[in-house]
Length: 325
Ligand code: COA
Image 1 (tube, rainbow, N blue to C red):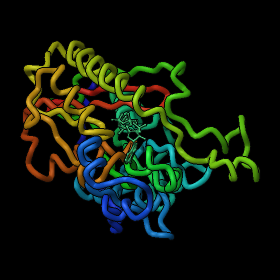
Image 2: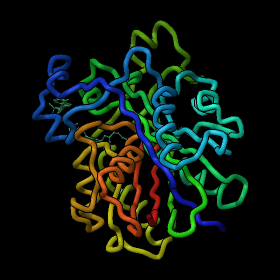
Image 3: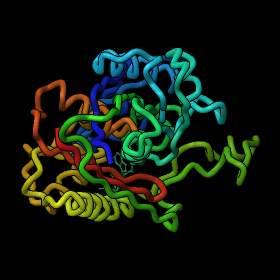
Image 4: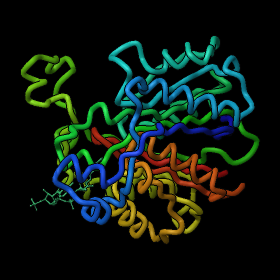
């Protein structure tokens, strides 16, 4: 099997900043509550005319530039998203057209907050098997479009953003191992009840605010910690490594207390963990992706480092990926 790694990365965060002070004026909450319970200080929101594909395009252009590739060099585009512009066509199709990536096939993956890791591992299979040479893997979300801005339990948590990675064959390092998991029996912990074939949109579903995220935060919290620890440990095991080999953990950014608990269980210091939750909140599939991009930009990852991407999300789904840089 060929070695596969990330050869370019880029991100795009919308300009508009929503601070905790802004949220204090919208719902019954406080900067103190949000900061201590979640670690979030602010998040980004799209402009009125921006959708998920617009964020994906900007992040992808940067990733291609970083990889020194042209859009026509791409054979495969995978977009991880739970907030597509519309039910169909996929964001990946819109992105393929906007980039003029005329040689690429493209599709979306819906694996919620673990979506970027699922997409990365999927792209890896196509390249390692020799079907394709260059893939673009994107995590892009406009969570503000599915957030109930009257519900203080959820609206303080989410934000909008995107990041993209170009994935190709590499001479050394690359993705060493991964672990993906699913348990669909936890469907009720985090979902949008209406808008699909089970409960199509109607006046009633709109009145009952059924098109927004419904979450049982407390229950999710403990699953999140257990599943992220398990995913990281199993992926490291498959790479014949353990947590003492890890230089940087790049986790999904849902709650700083979840991340701290995961780091503690993996026996990692917090300076071995990358955080951007304070700036962006939870951006689902874009969280681990932007965190990886920011960590690289800030020089937190050096050649030869062992980096672990680790995420969980609605499904429940989870996944971890061990990458040697
Ligand atoms: N501002 C002020 N108070 C709030 C609040 C807010 N924004 N949101 C909830 N509260 C209140 C609750 O109503 C509750 O009040 P009560 O005790 O009077 O009933 C109290 O704060 C504690 O709520 P609780 O849900 O127990 O808080 P928590 O410490 O579990 O933190 C979350 C809530 C959502 C931050 C936390 O559970 C979490 O992050 N869970 C995981 C969510 C997640 O990861 N989701 C995405 C998955 S990818």
